[in-house]
Length: 385
Ligand SMILES: *Cc1c(COP(=O)(O)O)cnc(C)c1O
Image (cartoon, rainbow, N blue to C red; front, side, top):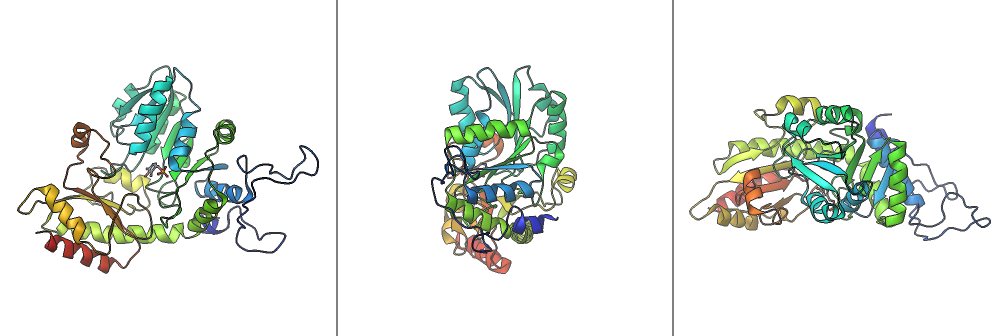
């Protein structure tokens, strides 16, 4: 079956007791046993829950995976995967991954004896040179945030596979509608379902999908032992969000393509970072790897009179449809200043090296009428002069 059908039906059947078409929200923390140790598949909701199980099955199908595991947040999913490592192990990680991922590796895992090398994975020779005998995992996130650099999943996986090292891909920005990393050689995919998968900015959640039976056993053990599981209600909301993921992703990308093209022609804009730019240095890879360029755009505003920092602050304050907020992937358009908001904890030198300066603005393009979004941006450009 195609992904649009799986998004609505995978893992789901009308409830046998009532005929309910929608998956029931099973809030029970515990489940009756016919006799001690003799239960119908569920005993305690940290270990497993029917609503969560349905979400896990549906999410797995979308990534073409045999198994799915749901977590209380994207960071909980990441932490659980990283706990499959042991002291002395080494991880290779992209140098501009999600800040929270960098923080877990740098501040939580390194003190526990896991060493890490952060590399620019657009450079495959550099990536290959980072491998050591004790390297046990590669962490790849593409497109990157907020510079929207694209990394070659298939080639990085080919290098890692020659060394027998699993690759974990954070697919939050692209979603399985745009790329399916398991088909390109990745061992597991991780998502912050807080973003596009839920898509309505009302859940914090995480998911891991994999077809590796050995890895999933370890992850199930850790999921239960460490306990960062999502509530059944949140699972229901993500499951409901998944049903419209295909139509939402098409509209996010269509709106973003219109806005990126418009920004590129605008005299107040110095640069636009978007995987759909036809002069993007990685356009060959993007054409091969991504079905659409997605819904995230970053751009650099030009200064007007005062400093560029002042202009970007005024620009954001003048918007009426876009909401100034962190996060992304919801139905509503969001806008933020990475240097001050999402990436404020990144050291200033690193920010400068990555190109995250005071004039850089990131937008998560929502599902509103694109004409209203363009008019809102145009008004803010004029009002911030
Ligand atoms: C938000 C995000 C995360 C972390 O997810 P939470 O649900 O906020 O814990 C991880 N990776 C990426 C790419 C993200 O955008």
